[in-house]
Length: 156
Image 1: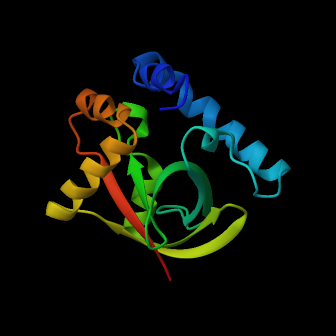
Image 2: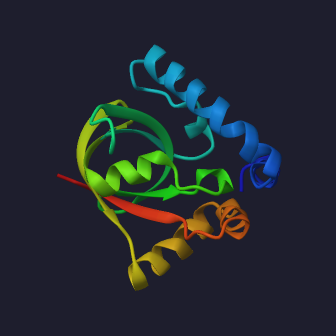
């Protein structure tokens, strides 16, 4: 584990982080991503990240959302709808449920993807992998009654 990562994991597990992070981190990510023409995501300095472009479930407009992700062998990604351990599902998960065809910006490349909500044994395997990848997700799940949604993004 790189120096300081344990401290960052501890901080990111707190309720105070959950209150402020959703307002600060995405705004910083969008700005840095735009300024670097898609080459850098600030939050990806700690966790890999994508910019998800998905159609809004209610508006029908394209919504761009910076998200941490867990890259998998074979060129797929798992997205975790943790919402930083806040009660409701994040809006982007509802967008993917209604419109699973989307696009991710990954290392400066735009890649068309199809999202699939993971359920059952497949979700359990992915959840174990996600917890090994970033343990603070366990604290997020413990704070909420809902099951955190996991999506696998596959290239179209």
